[in-house]
Length: 276
View 1 (cartoon, rainbow, N blue to C red):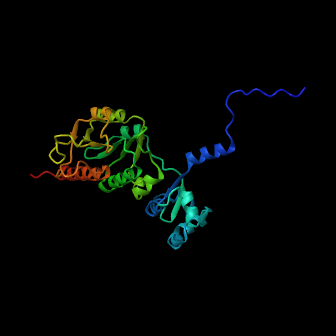
View 2 (view 1 turned 180 degrees about the vertical axis):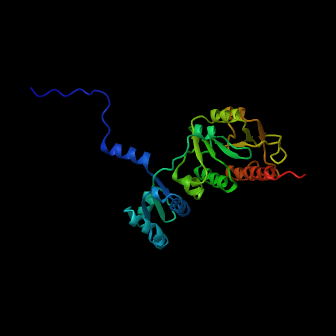
View 3 (view 1 turned 120 degrees about the horizontal axis):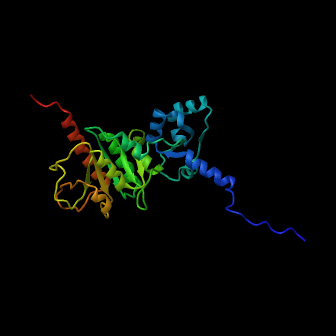
């Protein structure tokens, strides 16, 4: 009789291809965009794994190529179509780097470290567009925010190559903190004396007249629905940005810039010595 087929017990072991994909996902991050790649080379070149570029960027990358040669790292010139495929985008600006993921503190570690007296941060509630997230992170770096909290969920963009490109290197300067529950993170911040303020276009309080206390975390919702009910409950105050009324709302990245500029202004004012 032929041998009986063996019975399957448990799950099939993962294939080598599957294991390789999982390893790359956990240990490699594909980064593209000229300024984002240059910032990596300036701040943590030791985390570069390989470099891919087109002919137009070859000369500008001489220092990067020399680094790769000294450290036996692969670098390669590709045609435009191949570079598009590697980046999974046409917006790579002629340069792609595969790097080790940046080690960010956990949101719990960041909260425990605490915001100092005159510091501030930003939080995003269900902001989906990765271009907006990247632009917001760039504004955070420009105005000196201590972090950008991202509440992970079905309608929230996490850290991805598109957001990092739009951030223009800001990810190397401002912690981008992913948390499973944004309302819980805001609750913990509030318990440490941080004022939680939500941006709400329907609020009667105007940003520039509101009494804000530092340290402070400003929370922004998405453009369609605004702040979610659980997040809104964590806010000690809701503020709006006054306008002419001709337009109903602003792009969320523009809102973030205005909020951050105002927090930065108040921080500078609070830091000035009082007159005798």
